[in-house]
Amino acid sequence: MNNFGVLPMSEEIYDDEDLDLSTLADDELVEQMHDDLYDGMRDEIIEGTNILLGRGWSPDKVLNTALVGGMTIVGVDFRDGILFVPEVLSAAGAMKGGMAILRPLLAETGAESVGKMVIGTVKGDIHDIGKNLVAMMMEGAGFEVIDLGINIPVETYLAALEEHKPDILGMSALLTTTMPYMKVVIDTMVEQGLREDYIVLVGGAPLNQEFGDAVGADGYCRDAAIAVEMAKEMVAQRRAA
Ligand code: B1M
Image 1 (cartoon, helix red, strand yellow):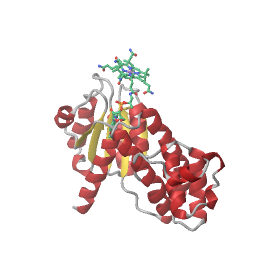
Image 2: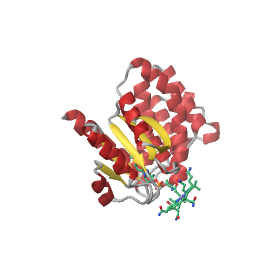
Image 3: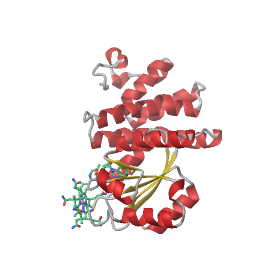
Image 4: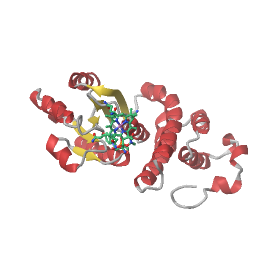
């Protein structure tokens, strides 16, 4: 079932168990892949990705049409409270299956990514479920994501900015005792004259808009879907400028 509340054509006609993806026309296959992403069916996403590539689709067309298109539906339903964290993680896992095939091909063709983000959970904090979800949803939206992991000190953030030159620095914190560390990172960026070079987005359960403003972030993201929306909008604005 998709977010339009109707059974997709493929489910009306076929028993999913017996469905041979290779027999579907391109548009039917894409629609089926959207459903399979929604249902977290990794093997089917891998198969569908290979079929489309075999039919001569470019890697970025497969990425944008089949995978990002499907994850957009997942993101909208997550934002609207129709899907929950485990389902989104499972969809993101399926997406990763397709991405593993496309990533090296995209690198070869030099297709421009939607944007690049470095993300990590701040020093002193080992919570990573939310941060991982954000990273996966961002990848699902076509961003290149460099995930630094947990317990990240300011030096590691800065080294990653220098190395990867991302559009966005994302920071996550789940503890009231670690969230102030975001200000340490941002203040250090200001001191080193780097602050204006990056969009800084922050998130985590104990944060709010007021906190985001107080530490000098460009955006506070209540959840992963909002992080994706904000990231897309801010990167597009920056590139246009
Ligand atoms: Co911890 N923990 N925990 N914990 N833990 C909390 C956060 C807590 C609220 C539980 C409680 O007491 N009710 C509490 C914090 C209290 C406070 O600070 N005031 C707490 C505590 C105290 C602790 C320990 C100190 C416990 C102890 O050892 N005494 C310890 C801390 C260790 C440390 O970090 N140094 C600890 C440890 C752990 C576990 C290891 C057991 C485990 C973490 C496992 C892991 O992450 N791999 C854990 C868990 C699971 C939780 C709770 C139950 C769930 C957190 C979670 O994963 N939520 C949590 C209680 C709670 O929040 N209800 C709790 C689901 C996740 C999808 O949501 O992370 O909010 P969230 O992410 C959202 C948004 O916030 C946003 O998008 C995400 C997806 O929509 N977002 C971003 C998050 N990061 C973003 C970054 C962005 C953008 C958006 O960047 C662009």
